[in-house]
Image (tube, rainbow, N blue to C red; front, side):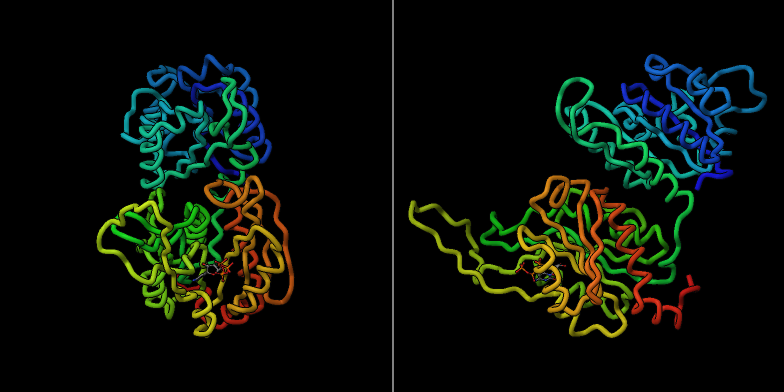
Length: 409
Ligand code: CTP
């Protein structure tokens, strides 16, 4: 995957810098030409000699070195096919988010036109700090690729999110960026994400725990693979993926209106949203006051959007999601049949590393022909790739898409 590719690996000053040696070694072995850049702080954690040996070329860190003929940071930036910053500290992420260029690595990042992949690693409190989170969101909005860190025991002794993503995952992401699959080129993919909300009064609503991460990953991957993507989303904390048409909705009925508006143009519909099945019969115009008595909120059913699409579909391929707490496969396959889906992605939300809010998921893919593919725990981005990998191999998709438009873009 990396044969002949030129990568800059920027290593910044965190304890996870030692893991970057493995990353550089793997990339070199797979045929990449790797130019390592260290920050001043990174040199406290890992020796340039280690990295020079693994990458088989001198390591750079000095913006003003005299050995180079030409403007070194511009040459390095221009020659790169991909820049990987791993581990990325809170400091480099803040600098990248505002465009600071006060050392070689930050200057190369600012000067390059190549994609930049960022793998943060730091203490959990730093990671959760709202200032840092804003900077990270900003990077994502700007089109930087971000691989979220893992949760676990951190070097500082604390437990939480902040461990550098596994090297294997960084390699996979880099390979995906360098060798994009364009098998959805010319297609329109409609994705729903997040949870819908049903108001009880002007202050309260009935909602659910959906973070929107799975749906946003589906949208980003579909776009990466060449599709035009429309993302219809309930309220989430996530930054809108760049280059994707995003339509924000709140209630199930609002989502239904927007989904039906775009449905005729869609080739694939991915319904990752957690849709409220019920809404209050009446919406109080004033904030309900507590009385000390029992309170009953009467609910009425919402439309089942996906079931409606199942009835309406002509050429569209429909993918549903089933978040279950029991009888995973039986419930999911029942939903697939009832809603006339081509595929359903089933996950048991009670398992650790799966479901709401998590960056990873453990899912089974069920197909209309009865096949079941169980996937191990993986990032939501990787799950999204697997879903589309299987989808483009479905007989229903292949027969329709050889007939029209596979080459158009
Ligand atoms: N869905 C939908 N409209 C609804 C409810 C669900 O479009 N009113 C979609 C979801 O986006 C998901 C799939 O249907 O892709 C399955 O959702 P789920 O809530 O698990 O299924 P339900 O049919 O509502 O079954 P139940 O709540 O009884 O588990």
